[in-house]
Length: 516
Ligand code: TNX
Image (cartoon, rainbow, N blue to C red; front, side, top):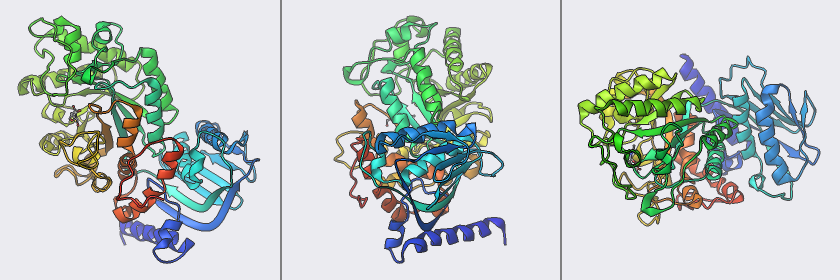
């Protein structure tokens, strides 16, 4: 029997164990732990480990430090227990172990809960951190509370072995249309980390605002940072702010990808420096929501000196492998100019030791195999196919499924509907390996959930649009396709509403979900 088939049978047996381990019939799955994203295998053992006031976290190796402190912080806050972190092995503790050689992969983990204690094993510090996110979901929802709650604190007995399907599972936040503070960005990172997201794509510039300080071009923020959609207040990150965001994300094993959108979506830059315009005249600041009207002057050397400076400064404060150059909707740039522009900017990105990422339109240019294109437009798949033909990998963010700024229903007060109305089920029901005909699993690096902010002004707005859809995209990126179904997912997701409420998230109570 081929290995894949054998694994499939094994997994379906493991799935049965979940159902049988608790009770029989349709209530069975509801009694098993309702985890999102769905792990590769879960076996329920019927035991329970209850956290008491003497609970401790035992860190077997130093690789456990980040995961141990994240878990301790969460437990201290909501249980009120001291939760010391100790070294070595201890009975009745939560033991974190990353000794390597377990064949669990860079993000995989094995989590075992018995009446005696909790053991979390991974090959890497990152794997332990992902496993801690699963452990959180085995505890009562009140564990997410910011203040001390009354127990008890039972953890269901399970054996979970887990690893992701795709290495890239991202969220994107547009801080250009509306600005969000460092504290708000950190909260968004935290919410995403709970669902094992590992990439944070930060859309830093657009027609309406330039949000990152570039020391060699100070007017970008002094002028271009002042505006936002609807004349709302602008803002920008200093380089120290940006480094702070990067470091914060890193402690959650999330890689930051900065995007400087070019050659279109550049009005804020063109308003800041007259010399960046082909006619030498500064553009007026823009606070509307049209797209496709601006372009850098692709024939002039100054454009590339400008981008060399910007990319050099960005690369120096970005430890992650990618610089994103945007490239979408360059409707005011002629195709040959666009192609030459992308090829030339790619060289600059390479010069500073990074790989280039951009929206799928970059597939029209001579991109190298190490570049990554992001599919977004259901009507623009030919660019994604072209990118794959050039050997580049794709991140899938189809607007009619994955865009968190699409309305849930016609009546949703926030958001847009140009791509689709996206109820929770629509957001969940697609597969990255089949969404673009001609781009198969081998070309897919992963998935992303973009959140554009033309209509979103507050943290509450972001949370309302992201929850409950973001966890669905996270699951599509993490969990194997053959284990996923809408009927099972909606029941698992139903358990998460109380977790979000405990964190003060005002989520969309979709009628499609049987909320607890
Ligand atoms: C399309 S997606 C855009 C953005 C808008 C978004 C709104 C993409 C690459 N470009 O400029 O904000 O639609 O949904």
